[in-house]
Structures are given as structure tokens and as C-alpha cells.
Length: 196
Length: 144
Image (cartoon, rainbow over all chains, first blue to last red; front, side, top):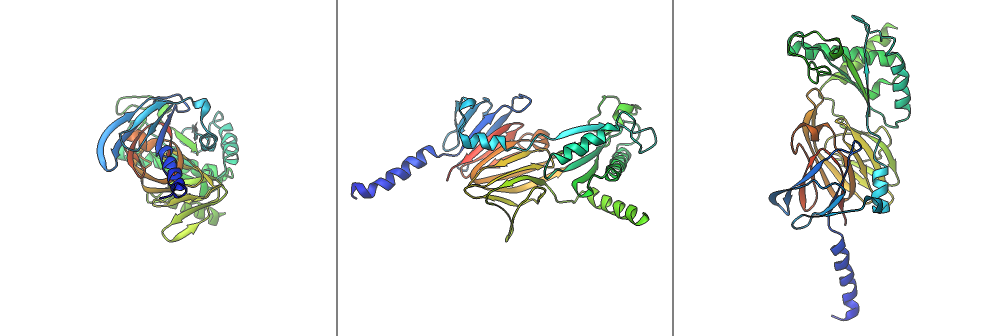
């Protein structure tokens, strides 16, 4: 083979050399420690955990991790991170006892939701109902679902488009104020609205 | 007035069904972008609903951002081909399984409820490896 014919081949080898699949691990917005586990390499199982923040790990052959300076991410990586959607926002609404009328304190929440939705192209809204621990678990799943659907209707009445929204009831899961079973607790009888 | 109330109720009942297949919404789509669904090639715009099995494809100048119903966020870079092979999510228990395949290109991920629910409930496949996501923000790059 002539040197001229070899040239594209060398180019291809160099390109492959620096172009291996990789994982870049970064701190979360809350600065939390996270990790990515490599569970399989080239079809072979074997677990190695990457938990060094601000690091890059090459994924061909045995995973190798090295620290990186995040102020020197390349333009493509920077653009990728800049274009992540904003984190979802959550708002808790309380209602006057036995009604679907918002408390005076929760009233401004609707304006907040409207403005959040307007500023998020392709917004999705999830309305999640919760209960306290009084009653059977299954009944509370149902009750929380009904609460969520009532709030969803209230939001439709406020002019928020129905096609953006869904309702779910989580019953007595994730109590805001942890209590034993069969404890009446107003702070746990709530509806949370998530705007994604 | 009555008609409107009935319609609203019917729509609410429909949306509240657990079988609703929406898994994510496109927030931003720039340059050459396609969502492949079986043999269909769709043009995503903000608000586009993603279904399990969809493949996100971007060209040289393409970029897409999306948020999943479990709060997971994706930013897809240029020259990418990324499939959501599996997305099962129970919004009531906030648990599920999520498998994404990065065939080529680049993907930034901020993980959500599924990754949080159980160790390695969220996985990412690259041509050479299988990754378990344990509550974090990271970039996967698969050069061509």
C-alpha cells in the first residue's frame, strides 16, 4: 500500500482513538451526589460505580474515569446542558374545608401557575391529591384521586387548558407531616400541582 | 352550560385513566429533528407527546429538549439517534422502569422519580455498555 493510500486509514484510526463513548458525571442542581453504574461492557456483566462528580469515564473496554474541569467543557457539551428544560415546579394548594373553593392564601397560586405555564412551551401539568391516614388505604387512594380531579376542574375554570393536565391520587403515601395510622392531620390533606 | 360541564367531566375521566400512554412532552425542537414511531416520521414541536418506543433523531444542526412525566429531563444534541425502548411508570406509586438507547450522538440527562424509586430502575444503553442511573445529572456521548 502506498503512503498516500494509508493516509485516510491513519485519519480514521485517529478519529476512532479519540471518539470512544463516554459518560460525564455532573453535580445536580441541588448539588446532590449522584452516581452512574456501568453494569455491562461489550456484553460482559460487571459492575463499576462512577461517583466522582465532574469526571469523564470512557466506555470502551474497562471503564476509566478521570477528573475534568467543568469550566472547560466544550461548546457542544455546554449547549447540551444549557438546553435542558427547566426543573419542574411544584405548588401546594389548600381548600376551604368540605369545598373545592381555594383558601384565600392559596388564591394567588392560580396566577403563579398561569404564568409558569405561559413561560414553558410544551408545558404539562400534573395535579396530585393526598390524604391523611384516617381510613383504609384503598379508600384514601380513591379520595385523593377525587380531590385531584376537583382541583383539575378548578384550574380549567381558571382558563388553563385541559389537554395540558392530568390528575392522580397518591392516598396516604408521602405524608407531609409523618403520623401513625388513623391520625387526622390537615397538612396531609392537600393537593400538589406540578408544572413540567 | 350543562354540555360544557359534561364534556369537561368526560375529558377529566379520560385523562385520569392509568392507561394514558403519554410519557413525555417536547419542550424545544431546533433545526432538523424527527420522531420515528414505527414506520412514521413525525415532526416534533413544543407540546408534542412522546410514546414508549419512540426514537428521537436529530441532524447536523438539530436539537431537542423534553421532560418526562416522572420529571426526568433530556437534552438531545446534534447528529443523534436515541430510542426510548421502555418507559413504564406508575404515577400513584412513583415507581417504574425506564430504558433509553443512545445509538449515536449526545444526550444530557437529569434523572427523575423512576431512577429514584429503585436501584437501576433507569438504564441507558450505548453500543458498548449498559448504565444504571442512580439519581444524577450526566452526559452520554456516542461519537460516530
